Length: 422
Image (tube, rainbow, N blue to C red; front, side, top):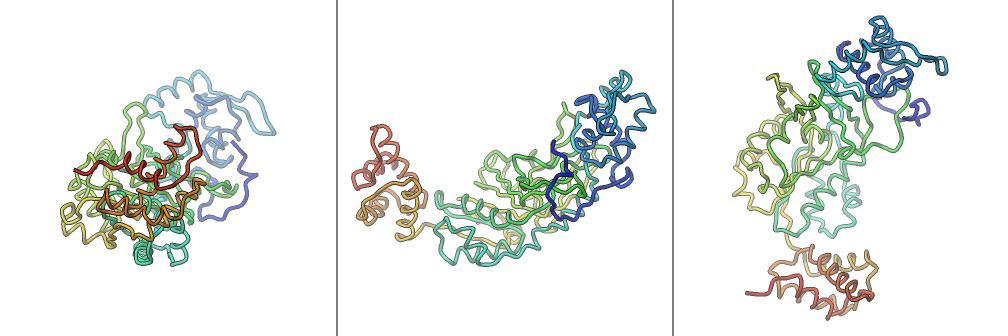
């Protein structure tokens, strides 16, 4: 791990705790984490243990004094005036006992209180999105100004957006692009949160994109500076994913999707087609969407309150009036219908896709392309451009030649792609 003292400076609201009392979690949690880390990753120098636990050297030295007094560790040498330490047999026995109770041995968690405070400070409601921001983010898509204006309005609400319309019109890619607009802002994500001795992991490198520059030596290393998160879930969404997930083997919790998406965007794709029934999701989130507070249950029955500071984007190809009741629709303030594109828009999309793959094409093909598609489909969907170009590329690859878009290639691609008329 790189020494944080060599890091480039990034201003932030979080300051490194200098004493055990500053950390905000019980001392026994720190003692247990230090001993488990020493057992799993040791021998270590105090500086290495400091960087692993994401705590200042002064705090780790204080933990070491206690562990040594209890004969749980011993000094094995010195490195650059810092002690090298190793776990003793007595300490190993204690560490194994602790690991049987909870196997978490990562970065020191933050307190629930500090997590709640920081999430509120970073609320997406405070984001201001202007027309140039939206136009720049959506420049790779072909959308009319009306839809762009509705999307910008929805982003400024900081609440929820409902995208609906037929399949293949770009709802998912629009939802993902919305997340890029807010991703230009940065937020702090904790590695984990501690509640009554229990650990809930939050930072997920698959979901959270840490900034390239590490934080300063003066910052609280238990937090990671990231782009505002964007979490996408589709048909795999279950009720369990909306609650704290306790692993009976590791014996610590993983934060639910809405906790990982806090201060960012949560996209519910193909809404209505999840394993979790729409009614169950609506009942689960009707209060959080309205009051911006969610309630999660620990295994022992304790309920904790966490912020619900998320821009939720629902995308569906189902009829909203059949999918949602009036009470829930009222809580989704921005509803945008995404329909088929115009002839001119489709031709522009096709040009962009062809250009992306460096494909040459007959200009005359674009004139008749729309007619070919309309003979097979009642809607002019943007997805047809990429799908037909792919068909043309695959045929050329099979035949060992350079792909070229002409009428014959388009007709052949349409025949392979569309079902025959009944």
